Length: 177
Image 1 (cartoon, rainbow, N blue to C red):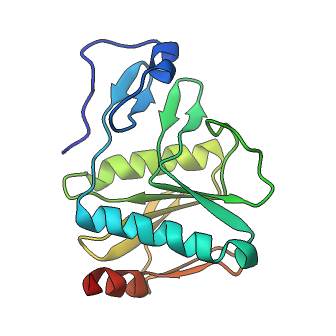
Image 2: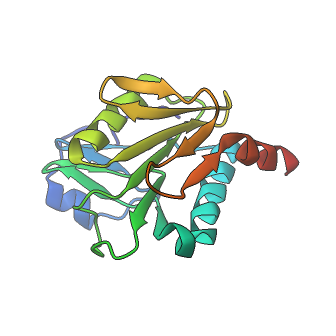
Image 3: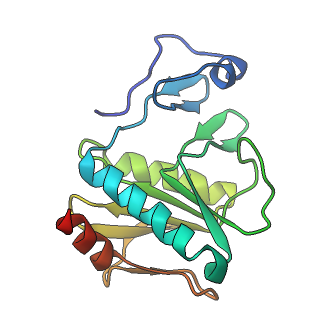
């Protein structure tokens, strides 16, 4: 399902924050946007990433949060598929401080251009690392100031840390189920 406005009218931020949605929506300048709901590949990769970061929580000094709201601007609330925070980060119901890493996982109908726009917003907010993983095309991208850059070797790292993600291993695990 492509992202689309969930309401015909603009909504005050207070209404967005006080409303429960079956699947959490994003909020951009008064417009509540449904998020692309992933299919099996999306869900499995998301679970695998959360599991990987949880498994390495102590030695990487980080922890993952799936589908955590992040307030990137006064009237922008985004919901990355996975946020990764440093151990000791401020604990907030809605993140108003940038996490170390935001990961977006492509859904089959999601336009990469839309993901690139979100990634640019994450970088502008101060998130140091933004990764985009496409389990359908079996590729990954790193967000940069000039757009999404294909990670040709399929290995994501964070400089000056032991964090390392090999997409081939994630995709091989996906193929085993």
